[in-house]
Length: 262
Length: 164
Image: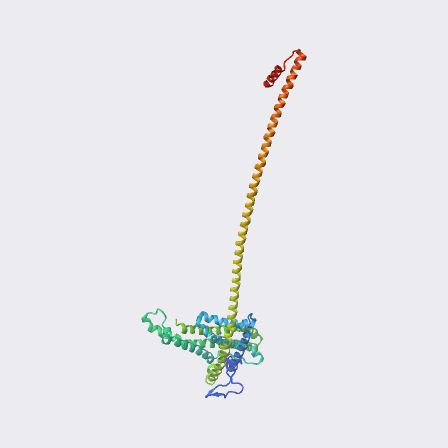
């Protein structure tokens, strides 16, 4: 890896470090050290809480902040209404928490707080975290599916109008595509977040190293890289929103499968 | 890649803290705050819908009142027009009667006047005859020294007048 020559290790930002001397903290033999990752989870949760406080004024004529909160809740409400229908209402708390928590995590990880010496950490760039989100969504799908439909839930894997002789072939294909869902859900978010952050770090190492190699390299390589970084930063803000949306949208689509089969 | 390199030391801490934080987010924000926000929105939507319905009802009532007023107004106008027409026709009838009376009075007076004129003319004509006969007797006496009887003079004058 280019880490030795670049002096900027693009992977260092994903390092998990225990904080406040809690590296030995354990529960039932499992290490539960309060890490920088956990710290940013707490920051995202608190930021989300503070954001939501603004929506609790419950005024008849909403102010800007209340309007913003209501826009987000309405957005999730409409999405579930459109994808799941009336039954979708009871999933609003979960999908809203999921969407907003991921969105805040993604956006907070992009904050340029590195300028003041704080190391931002995007915990959604860890598949341990996105994996748990995916397992939760998938678990809800399985629970709801088997709770509502019992063994009929397996008819999800036989699309309507499948000819009888095709069922032995279609069923395993559908089953595998169903079982792959939590992995695709987790990996999509993790890869998208990680790729963007790595790209930004690699480009920043180009800027630093090219200026270190001389003004000619700096103008030729550093400045275009810097311009590219600005563009990609904007793109990353977009990706942060899109990935949170995709995660919430796919979760609601999968829940729709569980609620209505096909 | 630290995500893989550190997985053995960190996965339990990641899972633990994520479940705690996301659990709090879910129960405090998702279950606690989101329904209230949605309630607020629902309440507002309901109030707006109610207000719109009330406005629509008021508008309908106003339309109905206007319709009733228009009907009343039309009836009033018809009645007024009828009254005017009646007055006009009765006035016309009275006028005509008066005119006929006046006309007949005028006609009578015309007839009387005509009769009087005829009588005067006849009287005048007989006077002219008498005067002409007297004149003819005088002329005959002065010029021809002929004594003409009054009856002969009168017959001659009448003959001359009749011949023109």
